[in-house]
Image (cartoon, rainbow, N blue to C red; front, side, top):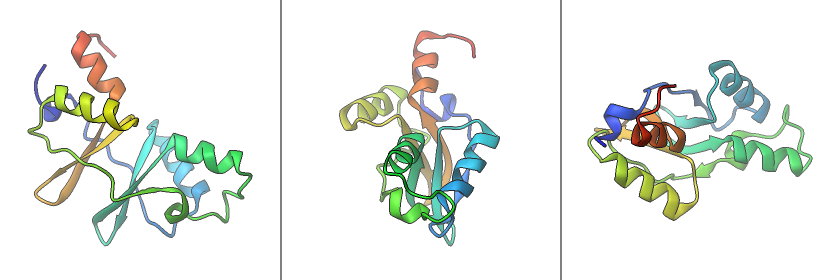
Length: 126
């Protein structure tokens, strides 16, 4: 199927740990993505996904007050652009998540989603 670099869009929505959930959700919605990488001084420290936002809302938090750091997944598993798409799929299925940050030479270069990987595996157009 190829490498992650061949599949990922490279579109990154970055948020800071002190941003509110509302701010993060707004950025994700504007870009039409299901996750945002959490960066602290340019360093990946977490990922916030639509599932995290759903849990927060179900917990009745105020999205204008709750902070990303409280709801993100810290120190997420990552992949590199050179990793195979098959490896990425296996990692996501084994760990129960749908978004995988892609890091090359210590820099976050993208996020690959399970949907992108499955589309590539089935060679289906967007």
